[in-house]
Image (tube, rainbow, N blue to C red):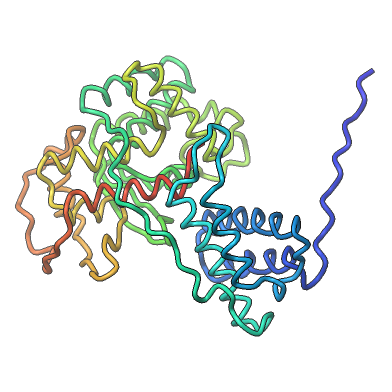
Length: 357
C-alpha cells in the first residue's frame, strides 16, 4: 500500500527578520497598486537574496551593509545557470532593482536607520534586438499547427491568432475576459496591461472570427462552473497559468518546423517587426504594444483608436478590417526621436523581465 507523502509547511519567519520584512514589503507592493506579476517577481528575487544572506548568518535587515550588497552583486555577476551560461544583464538588473526598492521601503518605514542600497550602481543593460522573429509565411505555418477539429485545438488556434493579430503580452491574454473583445468593431480592450494600464487595440477580422468560433464551439465544452468569464480556459476549465500557456504556444511553434525558438513573446516580436516593415509609424506601434514610454525623457501622446485602426489595417499582414483609411489625422501631435531599434529593444527587454521558461 502506498504511503501518504507528508509535506512539511515552511515555518513563518520571525518578526523583524529579513524574511518577515520581505513578506510585508510584497504585501505593500500589492496594496500600492503594482501588478501581481511585479509583486511576484520581487518576492522571488528577494527570497533568493534572503537565502543567500541566511547562509552567511545575516538574519535581520540592519545587518545588511553596502559591502554585503556588493558581495551579492558580484555573486550575481559570476553565477552560472545549469547550462553554464551567466545571468543576463537584464536579470541581474531586475534582481538588484528589487533589492534597492526593498531597502528604500525599509528606510521609509523606519525599519532601518539608513539605506545601504542607496548608492548601489545597477549594471547597464546593453541594447539587444529580438533573437528571433517570424516571417509572414512562418507565422502562418505556426497558426496552421493547431487542429480546429478538437476543442483544445480550436482554442489554441484562437489564442495563436490573437497573439499574431495584436502582439498582446502573455499576462494580458491570460487575464482577458470574454467581453473584452468587440468583434463587430474589431477592437480588444486590454484592461490590465503592464503597470495596470488600460488600452484599446485593433484586432484583424480573421482573428475575431477564430475567437468567435472558439467561444461558440469550444469554450462551452472546456469551461467549468462557476464560470468567471475568463476568455481562454485551460484543459482544467479555468484560466491558464502563464507558464502553461507558454508551453502550449511553444509546442505549436516547434511543430511548425520553422526552427526558431520562443513562445508567446515571439509573436510580440513578430508583430512589432512586421508592422515596422509595413511602414507603420513607430508611435502607433508603441500605443498598440502598450509602451507608454519608450524613452525615459519623452512622454507620448495618446493615440486615437480610429487612427490606430487605420495604421493597423495598412501595416499588419493579418489585418482585414476593410475600412477606408482616412490618414493619420492629428492623433499624434508631438514628434520624437525614437527609432525602430528602440521599439524592438523595448520588446526584447520585456522578454527578460517575464521569462517563459
